[in-house]
Length: 259
Image (cartoon, rainbow, N blue to C red; front, side):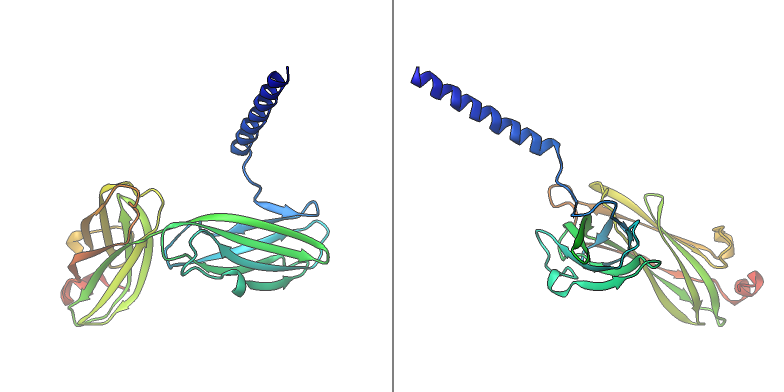
């Protein structure tokens, strides 16, 4: 009888242990801790940033009772080398009713992974902590040179960057002096970089009319790059477009009346 009871106890213990493990898998850890109700913090900013690249964020405290709050912002994670601000150098401030929004900048660590943004708010004995995870990936750099070989300045040159026909950036070059070259570049920062070949494209619109007219001097520069598969498929890759974009000569520029 004693032996049978022991086995029953062991079975019950195992059942409780298995149930605890199952509950841990079903119920995610809370991302906010507080000793008051009705308080929350809303964060706005990129969900993905590049390694050793910055990201701009704003935080807004929602408080129905309109109290003054102090806040502290820092980042943490399994690998935080190169990341900032860390807890010892946290961003601190105080916000008052009517101005519950604050801004801060964070920098991703040197290797791809996950980073947690901590926002700790206090008002007297009240506290609220929000933890917002973001993804850090290695950016892919796309660059090209635009040369103006004419004897007149070119103004308001629109440049669009695309990867796999999806626009990743849109820039405006204010001016390119006569006989000068300027470098334009952007970065592809995304979590859905599938292994294999990808197509990059740079569209240069000389007068910014939104239409790429090759006969009028607009340019399209295309290239391809490869992303390796495997567990370490996110890696730093520089795509240097091997072409120099030559803006057409003086006669065509004057005919187009570029602004």
